[in-house]
Amino acid sequence: MYDIVFLSYQEPNAESNWKALSDRFPSRTKRLHGVKGIHQAISATAHMVDTDMYYIVDGDAVVFPDFHFNYVVAEHEKTNVHAFRARNPVNNLVYGYGAVKIFPTEIVQKVGKLTNKTDMSTGLTNAGYSVVDIESNITQFNTDPVRTWCGAFRECVKLASKTIDQQLDEMTKYRLDVWCTTGVDQAYGKWCINGALAGRAYGEKFANDKDAIFKINDFSWLQQQFDATCNLG
Amino acid sequence: MPQYILKNCDTFYISFDEPNCDANWNRLLSLQPAAKRIHGVRGFDRVYKLCAMMSKTTRLVTVDGDNWVNDGALDMEIDDTGIEDATFSFTSRNVINNLQYGNGGVKVWNRETLISSNTHENSNSVDFHWDIRYNQHHFIASSTVQNCSPLQAWRAGYREGYKMSLVDGKPLNNFTNEWQSLIGDNISRLFIWTTVGRDCANGIWAIVGARQALHDVITKTVKHTFINNYTDLLQYFCKIQRKDPELQAQQLGKFLNNSGFPIYEMDSAMSAWMRMVYVNPVRIELPRPTAGNSV
Image 1 (spheres, each protein chain N blue to C red):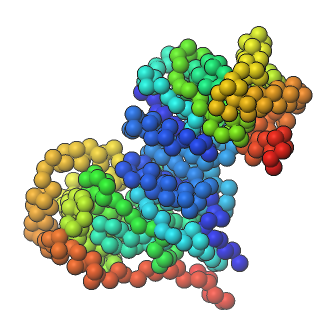
Image 2: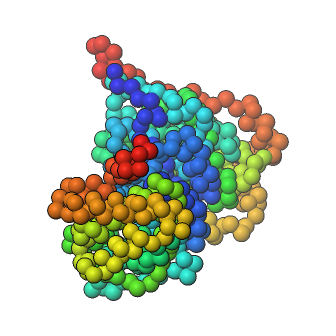
Image 3: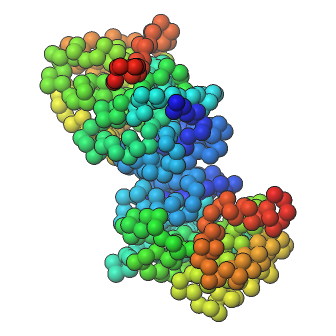
């Protein structure tokens, strides 16, 4: 059984999600909270675990009760990141966004903060990427206007800039279209669609500018974009 | 002049399996919303170094998972002039026995010192202060609440009982004949750990733990580094948890008395009285260099 790391930053629902997870798996659940910078946080998690592979669960993930964290990675796939499926509560898309993932410990340790890939799950040097067709959780990112907008913006920058390794163009376009059009009647759905549209525009504009795209991993910068776009800052 | 206000330093909350860790975490967040948390990591050297690696500030604050941080603690200011490498160790009040010293207390580390240290699982030792200088601070920054379960109380007593029996981090050759050579403050604290606490929840388990530790020191049952490993301690506790703690305490007390280490059985009322009358030893600050005098 692999260790589980719960990774949270400022998600309003982090404490309740943490409690649900740690109550189910008290002896193998670890937590890292409050570390700024997604890459630095993920790098640190690899130094917290005692198993050769480990799960990362995001702070806004509401894990399904029938997801048991008992997946066994085949030996020949132990250099891959394994992504389960998460359900988006706004637009009902089901794919790797916000899903539980399994990371190879040693590879993440070696990468450290040095990677310049926008998405660490798909862009780990020396690591492949495998999709596991099992739904692990709801990614409950729509908890307030800022977080909803920023979550949608960040994901749609990735999709529109096509910076995620191994993306299929047709699927990417479909997901982007759904993000930008669906869910206005859901909680903070309007903020989600606004963030998606802004993210698509930014991603298309800076598709060839790695530095500009990399900024989406900085929460403070995302907040600034929200303030500027929504005239609240 | 290098001065630091604690709330301006990166603050790390380190928890493992403490039953009260989430309550203490929420308390810390109310005082320091930017606090970071690391939970469930095995290895003391490993987890503290991880904190240091993640710290963006020269000095970092650590708070243990069993600590309830007091009002005003993070408003404290330290001045490390001349002792820049030292760790500032604030006093903590133990709710089981009212001991007030550094055990489990808030600490302020120099980032580089912590990164370059080698302790616990990496050095055959059981604490930081044999590798890193501590500047002891009198301010009571927190309460150490270690009595939320029998395991938590027993483990606290066992670990601290064992530590108090060491000299320079090493076991005495013959504890029975040499225990009086321990540092005076530590002897005093050892007496308290092994006798006071029947008046509070699970306090008897802390007493059993401290006495069991001394028993194991005398009989050389386990190595001192045994106390670093929470899995081993849990397995140990599983063997004894079904036995009546009062009976165990009395049997261990008789053993220690027969071994020359005096144990007085204090009932609940006596424990409460002892908390009132016991005066905690004064904690000693490091000397500071003055003109023409280097430390």
